[in-house]
Length: 78
Picture 1 (tube, rainbow, N blue to C red):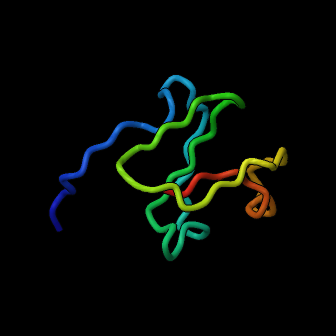
Picture 2: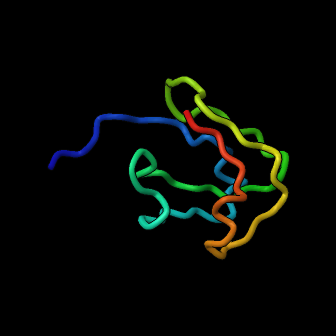
């Protein structure tokens, strides 16, 4: 297996990241390889690579580390 040739910028300022999650149980199918970044509310989010925004959710104020919060997360799918 060869290393990827792709490069990209972080979607948020690195100093704003308080936690990263790479969970193989919740990141399956089209989400395989996804990484979640925990950042403070109000942190600007930029596209990490060229793409088209296909889905957005930003109406949830519930969060936590327990898997029961999985359906409550805000997200941007590019």
